[in-house]
Length: 258
Image (cartoon, rainbow, N blue to C red):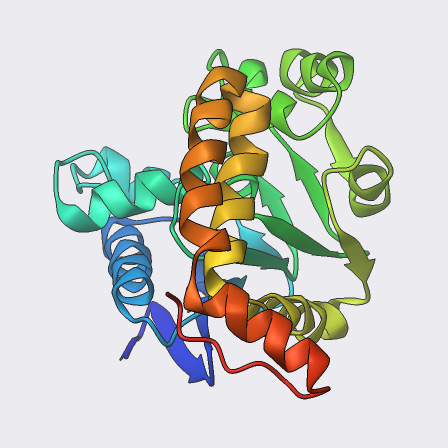
């Protein structure tokens, strides 16, 4: 699947989605948001896809956030109630059913950083800058940026959102926001390596970890209930039996996702 503003590539069990508007710093217009949402839906509906990698073209910016020119022109930039827009919104809240790895090849501010915050793992270029500067413009990061405290200590989250200051990739790694920082030309390969390691694991166990670890931060009470659900599903599954059998037979497991 491809469009001049976004590219979708299959790499075995992975889907790689590339934002392809480098001339506009990969700003999010209606077409790009719909394309991201459609790719999310396709990945969730394909049992062979085990992870989604999100990256961008060019070396200047991963994403500069909403395309203000498109917004000012009355374009639908993700606000209407369509399946694609709903899927995009779920992505920004970390609620995509498959693991998502962000590969930030360049700067990500405002909505661009909010898009990364919806990813489960993030790899950042060592030359990139990041920030949530909305308060400096009389706004606030209303696309999910205020949930940054789910990933980093509260005091640092407040500092970043209240000042709107930019920070480096190294600082992002230091505070636990990023999983790896690499030279820009190694960002995508590093993200794909993470995705391949995840995709090699039992899909039911991965799904359980993705949901339960996030819930342990956002809704501990619900996490307890869902833990019981996942215990019943995963430990009684054919994949659990296959995992144990493959370990004893010293071979790679063959997962069925059930």
